[in-house]
Length: 179
Image (cartoon, rainbow, N blue to C red):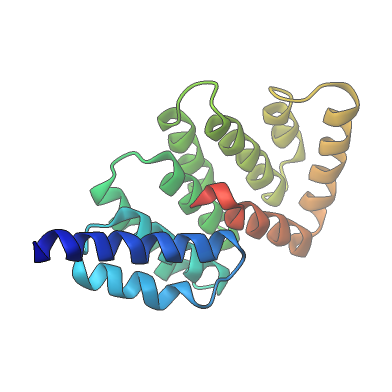
């Protein structure tokens, strides 16, 4: 009936918004997610996506509100916790970011791609906080030899260059699999 049709429309709008973000469009989807949430305020994917859109505009407190709301409907969601941690780091709340990313790592399936991505985001946060040695320790779970040295050199640069750190944190937040 009509209710099923509405539910399908909501899911389709949400899917379209997520697809646009995956293609790098961070302008158009905001209105779609707004319409989705007007119809169903419990759609955690739309709440999470709006958090990302606010983060990218430098509006970290607004982003946090959306991530916290998303967590009400998808408790201990590793993607939402990951994005929340990156947004906290972008807002220079590095200690909170480490807590959120640690929670995300616990929530992610062990050995999954999500788990690896979250740990490497934790490395970025440590580097952004000026803790290049902690960043290297986390990265050493995944890299050895030359790759580890390249990452360690990047972390050292990030620890010294806040603009570079913010660029990498933003890239991590907007990777396709963050949605």
